[in-house]
Amino acid sequence: MRPAVVARYVGLALLLNAIFLCISAGVSFVYRDAAFTPLLLSAVTAFIVGVFPFIFVPPEIEINTREGYLIVLLGWCVSCLFGMLPYILYGGAFSISNAWFESVSGYTTTGASILNDVEALPHGLLFWRSATHWIGGVGVVAFTLLVLPSVGSAKIRLSRTQTSVKHEDANYSTQKIVRVILRVYVGLTVTLTALLWVAGMSLFDAVNHAFSTIATGGFSTRNASIMYYNSPLIEAILVVFMVISGINFGLLYVSIVKRVTPLLNSPVVRYFVGSIAVGILLTTVSLISSGGYSSWLQAFREAAFQLTSIATTTGFAAASNASWPSFAVVLSFFFMLQCGCAGSTSGGIKADRVLIFYKAFVANIRKMLHPNAIVSVRLRGISMDESVVSAASLYIVLYMLVAFIVALLILSTGSDLMTSFSAAVSTLGNVGPGYGKIYSLGSYSDFSVFAKIACTVSMLVGRLEIYGVLMFFYYRYWK
Image 1: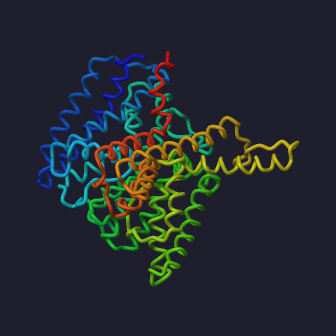
Image 2: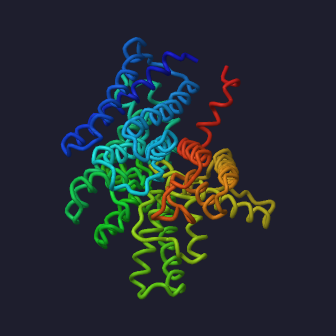
Image 3: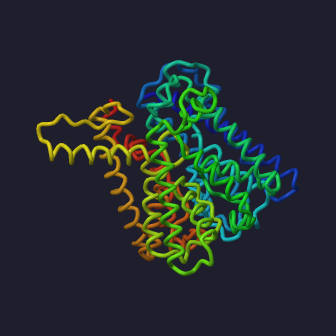
């Protein structure tokens, strides 16, 4: 392990954060608000700390896997630490614990907030909140890879530790994975910004909501989130882009840019989109049956937006889910656990693993019925390696265990069962809102300091897919 090499790469991540802090300061300057000085001081601090190892540590073409894991983990943690500086310097509702919570929630694209009055923040700080989503969506370290002087194994090893399971349909070189992600990422952001602007949002709101949507984050510039606009057109546009952002970005690149493989040829995409469609239908029926909705169209509109927002871990709100019937609540918990596809900006278990687990379950039933038969788990006609199936199943069990532990920690602070359980599932899956006190239009402001820290740890663990954090604690096996 070479600490100097790790410091250099983490420093590059800080330099990228400094760039976005400068842009945020520029926004603050244009609007002449009170966030200019906090943002500028934070940008200068991040630049100085980030440039120091970059200057004095020579570039290394080769980094090993252990260093790659540590760079990813430290890249996230250090970025979150420096990301909280503008909040602390600004003051107001931002105590140290609240600033840390807001920063981690931003970078991990969770979208949970301790703010009860978002609109009271100056424009520069609102932009910075959304910018942390946009940076975190593609990954701080993934951004860093673009400016690395080498294109050798350093890129390969870091990209493998930062991205999720590589999609079997996305036949692109590992060395190009980050460029692929950014081309799609930037293209979707620009397109969505233009559409939201045309649909009626101000340019400032359009940019901020595009940042949050493509990153599947959830920070909004309005207290009522998307409900503020009361626009079916805006909601429809966001539903489409939330679903797109929940799909593997490599597959999107291959399908949209190179036009090689249609999206719906992927069994994972078919399952992901199909499960959301079925979920919307069942939620609509549940909402109508509850008697609180005057028409099927009203129930469908709310179900479509809210369920898609949850299933993709975006966390926007176009209505309050505080009075949802029990059936709709329990159904939404499934999507809070599953979330989007591997290789997307979504968190959660991932639809890929759920589909593999289901196919393994069916294969096991068939094997029990026909003991002498050779039964394999197949995805798109290709037999999957047993180690992949075992890894997917093990991860699901581990994920549920971590969610259980986080729920117990929050419960120990005095929160009610629904709030505690939904907060654990929501933060681990980087979803944002939940139920109870943290319903779709609520906040985490009433949580104790200990509960907020537990939630932020849960966000980081979920964003790094558990193993990225566990690897750090098994450092004694690194030698």
